[in-house]
Length: 202
Image (cartoon, rainbow, N blue to C red):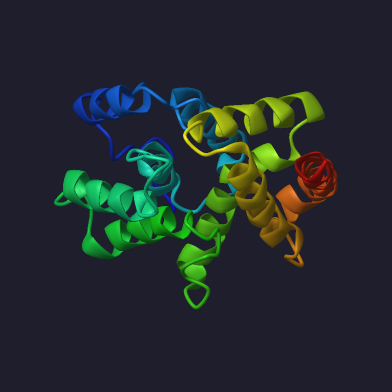
């Protein structure tokens, strides 16, 4: 969108508050390094984004609430974004940000019928899943970090649960929604998932 190239919806107070959350105990993957990795991808693909400030906000807020024992982290993170950003942006723009955050629960675009929001949502979700297509060593480190976040789960339940998550990804016709990410990461992501599933069943 014209005039939005250098816009931000986050002030220093919000960034500092979120930084504290991302540095919380037990965040072995869903921490500040994850946010910084997504921000690097956001900068790299900025020319493809219609509303850069909205995606920047979604990146900062999407894992703001994270507790591996809960199943509503995405919803709570979206609620926090709504609270902190209310009054800063028009309601329809805030709704797009909130919808992108909520969509990380299933990694399904929330606005398929809205051309204005679909492209940005697809890019954001692909950025969030980019780790699946990382080089093997980085992917393995990611898997180990996720296991540490679920240290309270016994090994048998972990293997079953994690394999279920990865199989659901493997069964998708496309892991990545955008041509850019699909061309670069689809094949390595599927290889990583296949390796991980073999390890989990071994």
